[in-house]
Amino acid sequence: MEELLTWGAANAHWIWWGLGLLLLAGEMVITGVYLLWIGIAGLATGLVAFFMPGMGFDGHGLVFAAFGAASIYIGNRYFYAKFEEAGDPVVNTRGRSHVGRTYVVCAPIINGRGHVKVGDSQWLASGLTPPKAPA
Image (cartoon, rainbow, N blue to C red):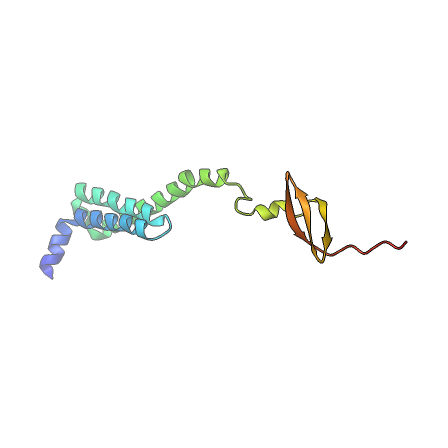
């Protein structure tokens, strides 16, 4: 066990690079995007561990936490903000755009079914047959 710990301390950069690659591979399997940023933080921590091997695992853990928080912040701030602005709030909810609008009935509603003119087409409509006006 002592040999394993000695090897791990001497080759900490390989452990961090392996963890980073494992997280990036997990990103391809699991939906979501946060493993990408944490995987990048693992790779960056491996780079720090390569150039500063004397920090130990506790120092590398703090570096990993700092890189992870920074990469998630940067990812949310600069990469996802532009997608939220470009989004259309009524995408995939076309029915909501018709709520509250008035359309012309082109085929009378009989037995609860009729047709209304929407744009240049006719749509099936359902509703109540209006009562007849007294003569």
